Length: 501
Image 1: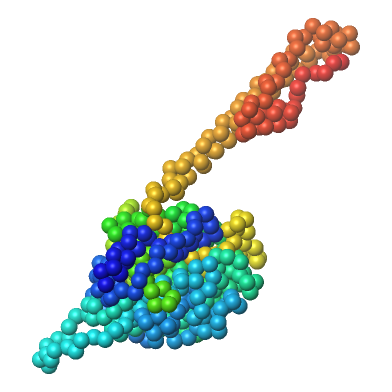
Image 2: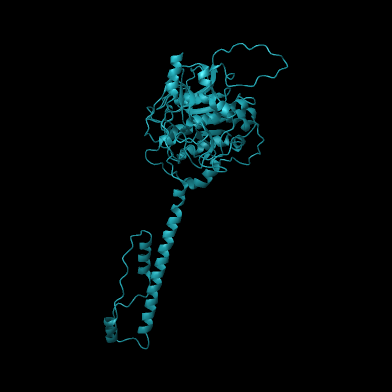
């Protein structure tokens, strides 16, 4: 047992690269496998259950009666911690099995990792409890007491029902079906099969999404489904949030380190971020019965999706926009006051999300895909095509060697517009001054030459010969903004000097 613990300790020292960057395949994935371990070594590592109010939220709800769809690489339903958690499934790639339980794609273990964080049930046999007085209150739920048994992973919503929708992402699909087709089909299937929450721990390096996705996400919005997506990881090259996490109305989840600070590697940034949750040193189940320690916003997303399931279980008649409003309103504000591009509305607080008194929202605080389509798809205007090489989704990878964020700061972005305006106005002012000088000279010459009768040919010739030559126009400036303005205005100025008799 000590040898296994030592092996696991070494595995913990290396964050598992499971969630590979969406679209940017520059970091090789490496997975630190851990030998099957006892419950105390797994559950003691699930720090987010106590630290983010999940165990206290379990007094109110454990997710019973709520279906949560996981659109991913498939879920291993034979894992001891996931037995009975998946009630239905499908494959939209053409490469999986009809139940969506075959692990496929570039990161086949990814879906099982995500599922265990969201709705792991644990396993094993509990010791018989000692008799207690009938008048005593039921004991408060704990990490060790939750689930089917004391061993293994227990998820945020251990009594939720999972729908497994398998996709092939991150490498060429042997069945030939693209992400552009798989994602909308997956979303529609999930909605049609009763999902109240959809988790998408997949992303891309492009903020744009195919127009073919519009109808599917609109369908989810119209059917009152909460959609949760991962923000992406800087360590994988995704320095800005990419689709589908940029779609209005989607709950985009950023990643935190163990100190509740925005993760340098296992997070991203963008105006669409809604809330932040743990993304480093996460425990997870692997296909075949194993476990791993891993990192990434792909793990942060199912923690938030699990809280959404807890809310929908406690308040079955609550609309999706009110569920989302509870999550973002009760989040602990950190970073810049109010919503910011690193933490969104703040850090997830599961207990408050279920128990706090929250004013009703008039609309989804994260926006509406319906309204976005109305404004941006006028007349069937096509989507801007994502850059070459950024058309494929992929699980967001975890990385083991932290590095500082490389996202461009706001100062660099904000300074571009004022500089352009200054150059533009300078060019216009200079052109107007040149035109005015030429016009005054022309008028003055006409007045001098035009007194009395028109000049004779001889006089005109003498005047032309004796008149000093006009100074040549200045050489065009190397400034791309100013030079064309001066040149064009000079050519169009009327009343230039006479060109002979």
